[in-house]
Image (cartoon, rainbow, N blue to C red):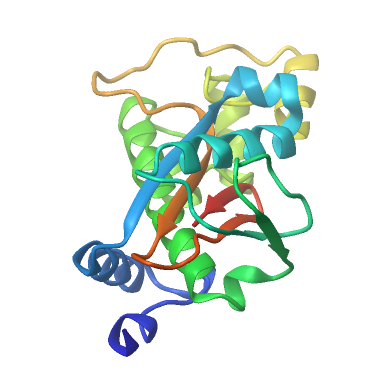
Length: 204
């Protein structure tokens, strides 16, 4: 619908409020959506790309029925059990991929907020897990949690330098998966685009 299309764009171009409004409109439209993720251990074993492709496959598997076509943002086609078309820059070129990027970004931000509540001091609610200067300083000061990837450059260097480990949360609460995220969204009667973007992987 035109009103829904007007709300959709690459999630990185939208504010948090705009993403929430678009996600609510997607849910109200009857679009079928699913999420998939991969664990820190799977990322270490498969690398970030392999784990992202695995997360996309899991997301598509959770849809009620396999899509007729999956659009993937990027150049790497995951094994999804349906035809796949890669679209470079897809989250800026396809409304369906943009929708998936919004769903995945919202899920990731909520997971980071849960992590921030359980492991205070790292600024996860603000930095979304990215290696800002404040985040790196917190790692050196507070230690490395199970949600930090040992293979990531900054964490690897800190571990080599004897940075402390912080294995237990300092606040109670539900624990989100330490993972790379993927979302799958299929509009009724249409193809389902699958889109990987940056370190979040989206499947729509």
